[in-house]
Amino acid sequence: MVTRITMIVVILVLVLGGGFFAYQQLVPPPDEAAQGPIYSTQEVTRGDIDVGVEAIGPLNPSWGGGIQVPGNYRDTSGISSYIIDEVLVKPGDFVKQGQVLVRLLAPDLDIQLENALEALEAEEKSLASMMGISVNEINQIDPGKGIILRAPIDGRVMDLDKKEGEEVLQGQIVARIVDDSRFQLIAKLTPSEFNMLTKDQAAVLNFSDFFSEFIPAEIVDINPNPVPESSRDLMSDQAPNAQEESYEFVYWVTLEGENPGLVRPGMRASIGLVKAEDVKNKNYNLNTIRWLRYTSVVDKYASEERVLSQAESIITEIFVHKMETVKAGDPIASLAGQDVRDTIEEKLANIRNKRVDLQELRAKSGLLEVRAPMDGIVADLNRQQGGTVQPGEWLGSIFQASDMRIWTQVDDVDILLVKQGAPVDVTVDALPGAVFKGEVEQVDVMGQDEKGVARFGVTIKVAGGPELKPGMQAKAYIKAGSAKNVLLVPLEAVFQEDGQNKVEVLEADGTPKVVAVELGLMNDRVAEVKSGLSEGQKVITGSTADLLPSQKIQSDNLLPSGQGDENNGGEKEDNEGPQGGK
Image (cartoon, rainbow, N blue to C red; front, top):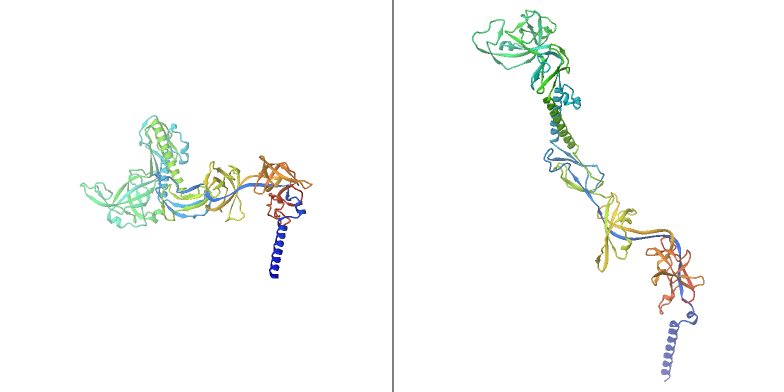
């Protein structure tokens, strides 16, 4: 019985004690019930605010250029192919506009250039010769003034039989200019005489029918091949001409001598062979001269040029007389007429055309280098040294690293902050600390639904550099606005009521007051206050009145401190004690 009573007493004690403890925990003491809520506040401060949208996306080259062989593949004239002589770059190299990337060889170009130059020089010399001027004077030619025929060499004017006003045909001889200071004849040696001929021999000529003086001559050419001659054509001082025609072999030896002024073409001379040393010393010993069997006739003067009419024309003036001595370039006669004019104009046109041809070939020779069309990075180069390429063929491509693009997406919450032309800061993980400037180039007007979220495409133009590579993942901070030295309020202090932005201000007596504010820029931490608050005022960011009935304050601070008073929107916290009911 005693035991049962004891157990009942213990149970009653436990029940009453537990109930009292629960009552103390759930029901606040009378003095606490009388206290108002505890407020967490921050001061309105002055600082800077920066608003923007973050996005990510890969870098892509905005546009590129081709590495191309000079020329046009459709052009069938000129160079048909090149050989790659040297490749100077490789994919990934940064190149500047105009930089030589590949050197080429054109095997046929040198030949074409040489032929074109020779053709032009020949045409220029022909016209200069026709006009009697130097090549340098061609550009001053006036076709209307006709042609002046000039002496091609120093010499004497011969066969000048034309008169002023007389018509001449193209190619007709107007005069001959002969250099009669030297003459030439061909000695005809019998086989036995030819076999006795030595290199140290010269000749003396005897024109006994005209004068008695011996004329020395030198051997200038020997034909080693025997020539058949008719016996009737061979003249000899030793025997008369044969009456019956027969043939024999003779050897032709060309002689030249100084003309004392008496020798003329057609004069017959006896020919004797002597030592060259005797001729030099003028030591003519008749006993040592070996006279040749056959005599010869003076063939011509050593130098002789004909002055020809260059077109069908009329001789307008003759400037010299027959037998007059002239110098090379002296005027002989002038020609005029429509044919002369047409001939001059035709030759001038030919010269112009050949100059154009030569310039085109020289331009092609200057195109033996493949150059970069722009600043950029070599993306690919698909030819190697020794390969054959055609004019106009593409060898690779270049992308422009200084002008790249990022295509990214922004959700509908932030898209209103993104404006075309807005500045952008771009960073890449591969280049820590490097910031590249960009600009919003395009914003899509229509979003695309992705898992229930509308996302809008945004294209960002990036002013990059050679260190940026296509495909790099980039982070873009799209700037939506900024303000310097403005009033800032924590974003958690702002609420809306009746369509207006408002905050609660803690008055000096500890009571809260609702104030309407005009806001400007906002980021995820602070908002710009344009009106409604002043610097230093305390705005309420939270209170114990916001706790549920079952919650209990465990600390003196309702909200965590450490927000600081940073310029980028963080505000200094001020945790107040009991200030009265709200």
